[in-house]
Image 1 (cartoon, rainbow, N blue to C red):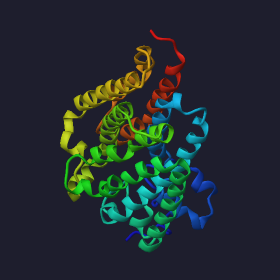
Image 2: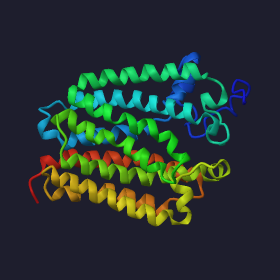
Image 3: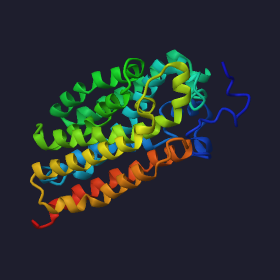
Image 4: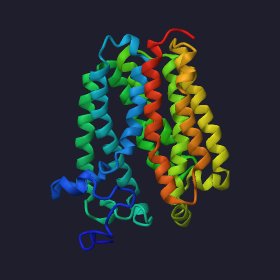
Length: 314
């Protein structure tokens, strides 16, 4: 088992930005737990949070001006629940992580954090997330509880299916439903279509992400869409990203947005087209850069959802 205290350079997490705020400012005792929650890599929090904000924006006419408060509550919830999910994932995958170059220095895999303390840290984060759900109200509490089975099974899917990315999409985009329910107090066809669009989006960006690990995954027997698709990844990206645009556009129309919403989504569509056209699946740095760029796609969709209700019909 590697001793991460011996060589700080060799113990750096592969996809964490160098000189991040944890390295620079966090008290030494807290660093392993903050890294366990991936707080040195905020892109995952963005990808969990943005569908929540989409759901809020989709239901905005019914929000009675509560959008800002809901945005803040969901931001807190996304930070702690993404942290809890990552902690759970690392507990389940700690033996795999020791055998993969990109993940072998994670706190659990390296032995920097013990199993019992990791479980306790996960419980603390879940309790904070529960507090957020209670603040959102009973419908949101029920909707949030329904997502727990998806969160629980996701880490095991890479062992049994070539499509663990699909299960990540089911879990990560649940916030599109939850955000809508927090505003409207009910579910409707529009947020369901938004949820489907988010799942298609996740299939794309997480397949790109998985290309970073495909050689190690092949050696240890871990499955992924990247390994399954191989050279067929680019046409797959075109297909799922086209579905993303169509389904998000349909969500807006079902919510009563004018046809101009389709035009507002074009910058987001162009961003996905750029990803699918230019990604280099054998270049780990490019895969990571394209993956991280999906925050910008999510913000472009959010902008379209916020602007659409303000525009006259086209």
